Length: 229
Ligand SMILES: NC(=O)c1ccc[n+]([C@@H]2O[C@H](COP(=O)([O-])OP(=O)(O)OC[C@H]3O[C@@H](n4cnc5c(N)ncnc54)[C@H](OP(=O)(O)O)[C@@H]3O)[C@@H](O)[C@H]2O)c1
Image 1 (cartoon, protein in one colour):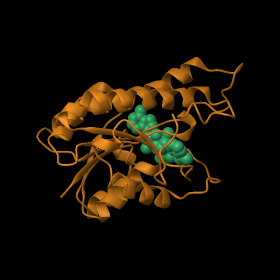
Image 2 (tube, protein in one colour):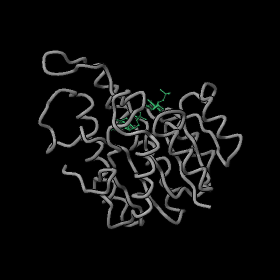
Image 3 (cartoon, protein in one colour):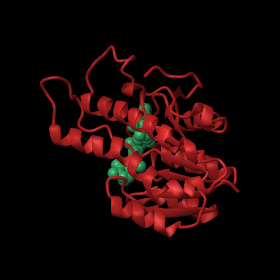
Image 4 (cartoon, protein in one colour):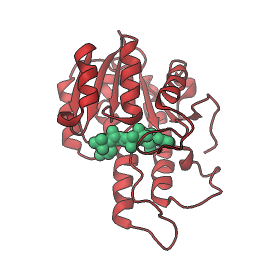
């Protein structure tokens, strides 16, 4: 049975990934900040092979505790999903630097912290795949509308970080791929987004099934198109 570790498995895209992979019989390691209030995840964990791990992606100690608890377990796919958008309306003249630092901590350093801590679990698996959810807003080439400086920079930076990780980890056969889920109806995406979590995740799962070393260090749209940096 393949296995997947998902950060932010309590709601939004992370929860939907947990549901869809669990329905296919995957072993799920579901990380979230507050398992005690993760009622949807708890329901899923009753009926499927789901292990819930308390993990805050800004807290290295909590990540290392999770890695130690899974010591010896192979993880086929490590899915970095946790993310925040920070305070709204942050364009030139209106930047909140504390909020920006927090966004970088979660969105840029978070995926690298988790990948470093779980690299041995991934190396031990068959698929050896790290997938990080970035955003079209992290594309420098695509930025014609401005604004969202904290969020955009956090995603552009995680793109660069994972491109380096892809090169650093290639000798161990580990692939690191970046994906844009599209604009999705979650707490972050809001009610006007055109995609449901179920549609976005189904498309991303089809894509993830094809990923290997030839995709490593690249950035893909959920529909399979390669995205401009
Ligand atoms: N929705 C979209 O349209 C869209 C578009 C492009 C990219 N994305 C990206 O997709 C990913 C998932 O977003 P979403 O739409 O599912 O957002 P969401 O519904 O707002 O959920 C965000 C998730 O991240 C978790 N999280 C926040 N800070 C965390 C931390 N420090 N440690 C661990 N978990 C933390 C939240 O946990 P709590 O419940 O504990 O707060 C929650 O589970 C993010 O990386 C986001 O940037 C989303």
